[in-house]
Image (cartoon, rainbow, N blue to C red):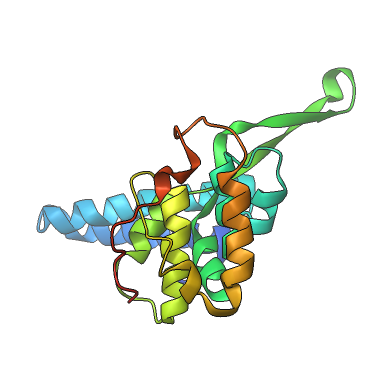
Length: 213
């Protein structure tokens, strides 16, 4: 599951992540057997810093939502609808953008040079971890408006399995976004593939939706 990149203790980017790993490892060394739980937590944190440094070194920063939308391997029509809906709100889309990632397995290679000088460059597929984002937003720490919360619940119902929302009372409460959101929902519901769900309306229900935060 994707988590946002942590802010290094010192520095920035790949170098900051590696320096933060060193700080945690040094802290673990000073504890010895005096506090095994704390030592384990620091060593685990150091591993996470090293993984973050690896991702930044190999793949660069996180892909943008626009990069995902423009890629040829978005994932599903649900992804396309979710990305389109996110485009209605800079606030909600900025929050979601913290949960994009470059796939470490899926991608393609391009090659340059000939013979022994031939070198390949890996081009990973950009992805969005909708489940991780929705789970993170479920923690009530956002200062969003009620309209932004409704938009989030709508996106989550489309992109995350087993999440539902009542369209009536949601779409008509999106204010200036209502028309565009309705167009996106209609396009999603009337087309695309059936790889993930038997029907496009499976994400919707007539049960009362949770009140916007």
